[in-house]
Structure formats: structure tokens, C-alpha cells
Image 1: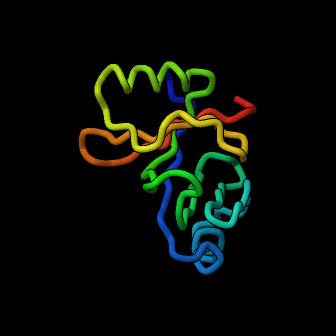
Image 2: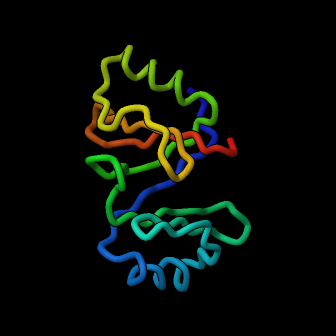
Length: 119
């Protein structure tokens, strides 16, 4: 696997209520997207970003981080299976344009391994 980006996913109860802290105080002023249950904010220079997540639309658990792997998502999935890692959410083409799966690391953290259509 060759990650091209890693984004922390913070669990919040209400994105609208949390937004002011992350945009106003931290200065993450660019909203990349807001799907109601997940929103991503980044700094104007693009060097810092965070996702606020209330739930996952299709997976049973929230991921601690999202790891972008581009076209390597299928190979990453096969490698996770080969290593015997727990797959929390199978390799799926999501309706919002991602191909992804969720895997549990041996330490218990859940990772969202993802490929965007534009990768």
C-alpha cells in the first residue's frame, strides 16, 4: 500500500455545532464538503485538514482516520485479507463516489482505506 494522504476523523455529535471551533479557532476555513454526517475542513494552504463525523452512512463503526490510496485500494484490500486483519466494512463502491473498506488495526483502531474517483 502507498498512502497519498491521511485525514483524522473526529467523532462529533453535531457538525454544525462543532464547525465554529474548527473553522474559527483553528482557522480551517475551507469546507471541502459537507454531507450532513461527515464534513471536511482544511487550511487555506491545504497543509492541514480534518473530517468531522457524526456517524458512517454505510459502515457499522467510525474510522479513526481515512487513508487515501488511489488506485491501490483493491490491492490494499487483498493484502488486509492475506494478513488476516478484521474487515469492518467490505470493499464497496459508495454512492458518493468512493471505493473503500474499513479495516481494524491490531491495536483496535479502525481505518477507512479509500480511493476517490479523482485519484
